[in-house]
Image (cartoon, rainbow, N blue to C red):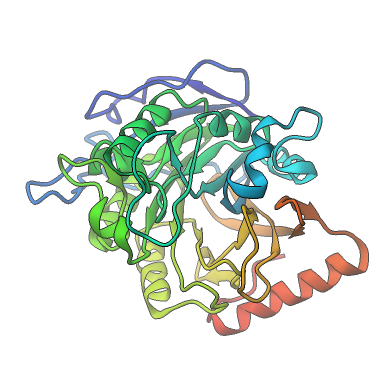
Length: 374
């Protein structure tokens, strides 16, 4: 597994606000954080760094892999996974698939706090800061908190989640002390290839309305501020040839993308994103190519706290992309799994896996996306 080591940003990409460095570790990719400066109106405006007036370029001959998984909880039947010991990590055997990739990303669907009063909503979730170390030990490199449960326990929970991010052993994206930090990409160098990973939530809910990050307000990065997100992607493209956008989006229980999803995907592709991926619907959605941009409209549940009434809600897996150093997607491998009775994603094999792969490929039919290159 690759582990991150902190470095200062390259000249011209220095932090515009104070940044907390990741703790030293061994590995073959180097991480740093590049912020997005807020405009006077409170949205995060982007201007290209002085040293990067054009899009960053990379070696087209280089090859890297990036793995993605869906939503994770440490509540209910999965709370005990915080205490699982090696060799089986919290995510079970499928953690090896995440660890095998050069970089891996998923969504942590919870506030990170043991304090605060629950927000006035049907479902509220929280976990301890230990979850971030547990995910690191399970092969995860980057965690998104841009979702509709990151601020489920009010101001006290928000403060604790910010503190957990500041001390996290792995990068946390899509959440911050202001819009500048929330929209900032995680910047990594993987096998000599620069990669930027951003996150935001498009879910229209209490969290996105009440706890959206602003110029002087902590919270989540909101994809409802589409112009802000597009500008953040455009800036990231000047910093790294590989730009990944991890979104919380879609309609719960619906296996086809909404108009809001397809519209945003097109805008982010035009802004230079190599891949636009996400979760939220509690069921898998189709994936494929939108021009040169890979789009995955929904990864489904992954480590899941309880049962769901939605059809096919236990279908899950890990999606691993192969990209060139110039940011071009050249292949996709899907490792199918089923959320088992303990809430853990159990890998499938044989005829069962073949059937799951066939069904997943069929989900692309309502997306308007093309097949991924073989």
